[in-house]
Image (tube, rainbow, N blue to C red; front, side, top):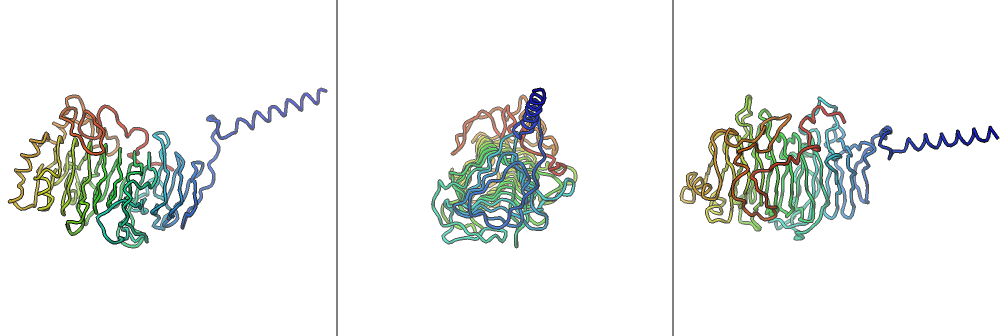
Length: 444
């Protein structure tokens, strides 16, 4: 009988010990599983779990009809030397729905301390929404996918929420890939709380489409932080761009926003017109060793329209608002484009135009801007009063007491939620917990 009792006690203890090692016990940390590579085509539904790292090996295509689900907290690293990229094709979806506590990270395959912009390609979403192209167009970067002729404006390419994309920007065959590129992506897609870090080309580029985005962060971009083209008519609200003074594309101007109707400035419809509200664009502000190609806060050109309201341009190197083409200037003068209730405090000239003087001059732009509720400052951030906007390690974009960002008259903007401040932030820092300002030294 004693032996039987001892056996029962031993069995109970063993069961208790095993139970304590269950993975759902927060006090027990089980070792991560061996990293697993993904490559080629994903033609059926697949889930990337957070219990291991995933290695992106070359260009991976999620094909039409397939859904790629990525669990919160998952790390996806690009295989070194493979020009890795993730392409979500038309009819496919990505469900990368992280949380502030468990963001999903796409990053370089190199170790901490050795990462560089362009270590891998980036993420490409291809949808079926409207563009102003009449024939199919290949995506940039040498990826064998086309887009452009569908007209499904509520198309759904999935979810990117609480996602970081670090050190992207190498082309598969030719030109660079942006950190995150939207090709004809529809309004059914959810894009919220996404940060790009040291992108070697643009941070976010939109070729046509109708997608609406919120809470975007472009940190230390080589080229443009936000680029719009080919009839994009979606919206962006609550977005911030912070540039590294020492880092910029040596061959092309780096702007907070660059926008064209198309590369030739044609009248193709729909005319490109992003609807932007509550954006904060932080330029290098002529800091020590500022690289030469840092340029404008806003660069509207080649026949584009624009809506840019309730926002802040601070420290942009070559100017604040630049309206380059005659067509873009005419749209602004007629009221088809808007620039209202903004704060403009670049390092140099606040308003620039290359348009014909018969259409509009820089002085006329300034007069119209002031009538439309914007304010200008010559002393970058002394008058704007953001807490610590130029720091590359611990930035604080929130307005301090007395900042003009906390005043002004809200201007209703398509796709935007009404708030009582200018720029991307009021009293709450929505970047807390999931962004990374030191990705170079983060050990994954």
